[in-house]
Image 1: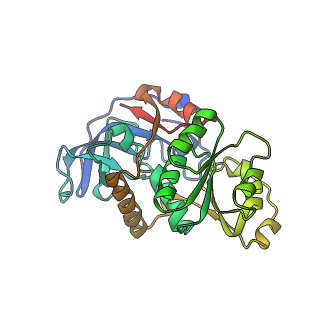
Image 2: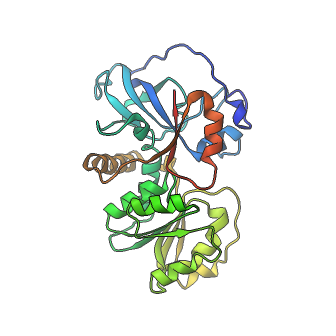
Image 3: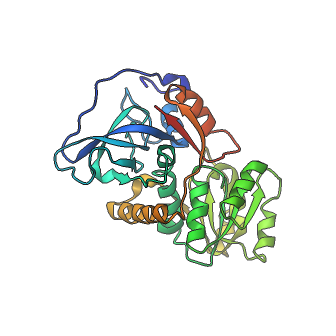
Amino acid sequence: MHEFGPPEVMRLEEVEDLLPAANQLVVRVKAAGVNPMDTYVRSGVYGMKPSLPYTPGIEAAGIVEKAGEGAKEFAVGSRVYTSGIFNLSTYAEQIVCDVAGVHPLPSHLSFSDGAAIGVAYATAYRALFQRGHAVPGETVLIHGASGGVGIPAIQLSKAAGLRVIGSAGTEKGRKLILDEGAHYALDHTVPGHLDQILELTARQGVDIILEMLANVNLGLDLKILAKGGRAMIVGSRGKVEVDPRDTMTREAAILGVYLFNMTDREKAVGYSAIEAGLENRTLHPRVGKEFPLEEAARAHREALQPGAYGKVVLIP
């Protein structure tokens, strides 16, 4: 990108091979994850604007190709995935990573699977446990549960002993939600669908809501929270009007979730939990669509389409 704007501002260019500095790795990218955030950065509306020219992308999976001095954790040839790091520039054949932001990719997972881990699973983990403080036995509502963050949120919630209600806008998406282990799947295109929440919870409401589109849903979310409930803002595309009184008698909380605020300690804890889940197979990434790198513009449009179904991935 040499300018901010529509998807067409992204163009393929040839550059020199990359070299690692101390404690860095060069990774040959086999798959790069596409996130809604990538589209906001590209369009210039995101809060953090990178310097131009800029290569998009904040997560990938691939093979370690070169290691800098002191980077001994991974041998050349190791299969790895990266954690979500702003400005990692993963829409490319090669990336340079600090070794601390690289994780082993289990042999039973594909590179496309690996490209679906770093951002989505860490965001879901942070929302549920580091910000939402979810505990076994609580009920969680995951809006847009068939999408890139929604699927990890279902898996993490199930593994932690939570009761899971998911929503999706298509029959295919709702089937996916149930296949992933949610107890209930709702159609969020149906007016009044949130009324079903009160029926499913004996009118107690839900303890946690993971909200992917707060500008549409937050005002209604607050009305179905249980006492002490938490609405976790994972995504929003604009402003919303809410009634603060809906938080008062419930003593409910509205909490923002931002992956890049994780401390080093929180990253270590979160990715350790994710790696354990990948190894014991309670966590299993779901890739919805793959596009060749030269079709990045098409992938960006797909990432914002309603009816999400798994992760969108680019293949160099």
